[in-house]
Picture (tube, rainbow, N blue to C red):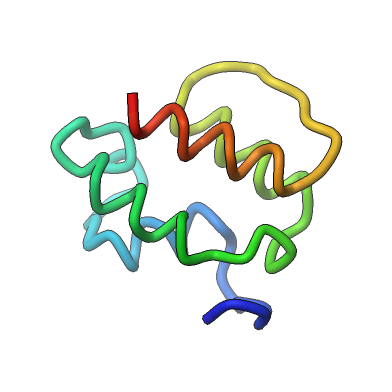
Length: 82
């Protein structure tokens, strides 16, 4: 789906594609690999910076600021891979 805008919010999209029944499932270490795969397939430009920052805060529980969506996406991927 690269290069296309999604109708749902970023967190909702990630949760749906990773098979999470609830947004809180995005905190599950057991789902980290699936969540990583979903995020890796999303073009950072598909969502605005605020959506990405909200996703980082929700998934990592860390308050981090980024200059662009690409930085936020890379940060999330790095966090999930660790």
